[in-house]
Length: 246
Image (cartoon, rainbow, N blue to C red; front, top):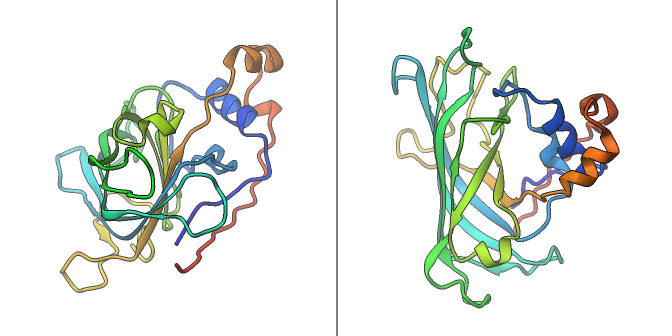
């Protein structure tokens, strides 16, 4: 199953626009620039249980997503993809619950990504750890969600280690997560989850994890100019949700 959505836009210039037009702190909303066609490798994860606990601390809530890494696509060619054996997927993130003068609602305070398993079909994929990453809350927006709620969540992690590193070709990993029936309303002061088992902690969420292409910043700056950014790029807001049963 896949939740990767594609946009008919030039990835390098959309990313550049976000960088040049963004401020120093995060803000609510989806990370639209992720939906330019991402490059491989792409890890598909399924059966993801998503839960959010607003009681983590006085100011913060905790977002958890735990599931199974099932397939690895190395070249973008139609299936069969490479099956992942003993696969695991986990995002553990904390965020601010409400907007104040100091931070935005939903602004992350930290987080980690961990994808485990082995892929016998691909050389070097045998250590048991495929990819790990950390979410650095500083700088550009690293967590996206619908202002009025919804099931789609986006994350940007700085990659750290794992068997996928030699193939990754980027210092960052994007995750697009469809929680599927979590009931998220846009309010981080109340709990939500996508449990379908009445307390056993099993969900039907799906996610894609893939590298974020890193453009030539000198060329982009020359093209856009210092005052460029969002005003020079019109993002095509055509979202397509795909799901293919394997």
